[in-house]
Image (cartoon, rainbow over all chains, first blue to last red; front, side):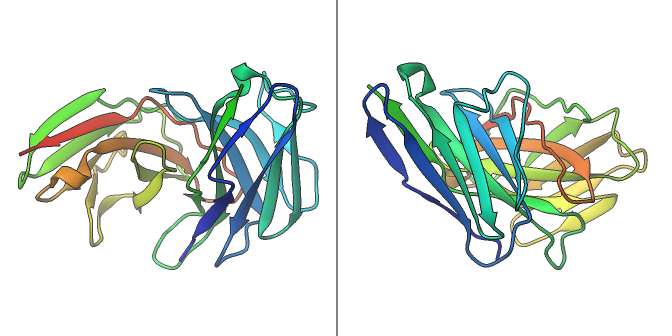
Length: 119
Length: 111
C-alpha cells in the first residue's frame, strides 16, 4: 500500500519553457502532498506543502509564481515550473501523506522522482 | 521541528548487522521517529517508524530508549543492495507535518 507515482520520470526542456510534473497517490487518498527538490549529493529540501482544495504553502525562499502547485483532487497534485532556467535543473520528488494500519503516525510516502534538465 | 544528527557515512560487509544511530535531543512528546532509505535517483522509501521501545518489521528493527533522545536503526545481515542513504526524521502524529531531512547516513556495503 501507499504507492505514489510521478510523471514524467525525466524531462529535458529549453530555457524559458514551462514544465508540469504530476504526482499521484495510486492506492490512497492524500489530503496533503509535499514537493521536494534534491540537488546532486545533497539532501531533500522541502519546497511546498500542498493541500487538496486550497492554496499551497511555500517554504521560505521558494518563489510561488515560479513553482505553481495545484492539488485539485485527493489523488493528484501538480507542480509547474514556469519559465524554467538551467538553475532549475534538479530532481523533484513528491510525497503523499497517509495513515496506514500498523504505522502509528501519518507518514509520507514518496514518489520515484522527476529529473528535470533545462538546457 | 526537531533536528536530527546522524553519522555521515558507514561501511560494512555483506552478512553483517548494521546499526545506525540518530540523535534527536529536542524530540517533542507527540513526535514519531521514521526512517527512510534512498537509492540514487529514486525517491525515499519508508523503512520503519516507531514511538518508543522496539519496533520490528520484515526489513529492520528500530530501538528507541526511554528518553527518546536517540534511536537506532538495525539492519540484519546486510547485502550489497542495502548500499544507500538512510535518513532519520522526527515528526508529529497528526496530518500535514513537514519533514526536515538532514544529511542522512551513506551506508556502503562491500563483499
